[in-house]
Image (cartoon, rainbow, N blue to C red; front, top):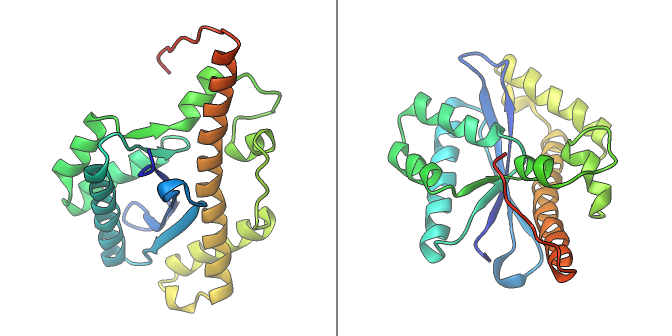
Length: 207
């Protein structure tokens, strides 16, 4: 669906009070256009609550325009985080429940590990990216250092001290993850179409 979203959250599970999800990123491709990215920063509890509400409202708005839309993510972290946020803030409870029951969220990791046999040493999305030709804009070693810098700032309660360079780096890393999920979904669809074109009978099975 043109309304599909590709979601990735950056979180610090070691932060006090059960952790914090400090960056809500998502990619989309409206009406066949080039992939676009947007993000919501949340460096405090109030900002985390507001970002979560805005994300759910965005999903509902896009689903209202096209009920066939889905939200893709890689591994179960995103849906687990949203359930935690519902429990923490007691907001958007019915809305998230409806989305989960309607199976709007699609875990691409669950798809890959049951549908693809790849010559990689792990099924991390970063290990799969050469299969669909994704080149990251942000160096992973630098991103790892900057992710830790964000976690240190959260622990010290000094998020305002984060430089624009660090935040840009972390946002770039998150953008790469979101675009990677989009490109992975498109690649999986191409692989399926090619298999079906050769007469291969594809079967679905539970993850």
